Image (cartoon, rainbow, N blue to C red; front, side, top):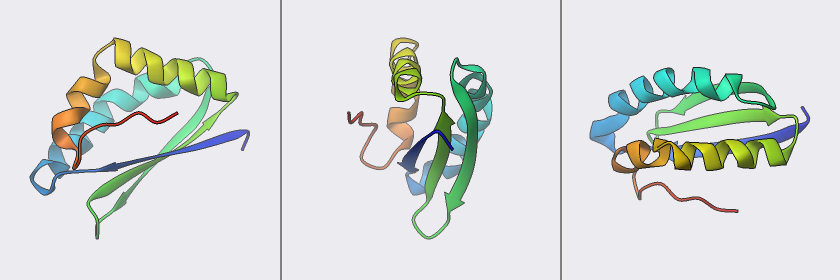
Length: 90
């Protein structure tokens, strides 16, 4: 792996199915984004948390992707599905 990024998304219990469907819809664009080597999704049932294990050519590519998601409304769509909301750290 070149640049490993782990994104954890704790779903509201009543929104787990909706978040799963949204990830199925959104992740093909993630995988096609410049610099994305791979994205694997794991679900932790005990905490209703989806974990995305991402491998990127560079962290700049991943940051560009995160900015793009913000600009295209992806974060706003995720916000109501996540326990505690969507936050961006960096």
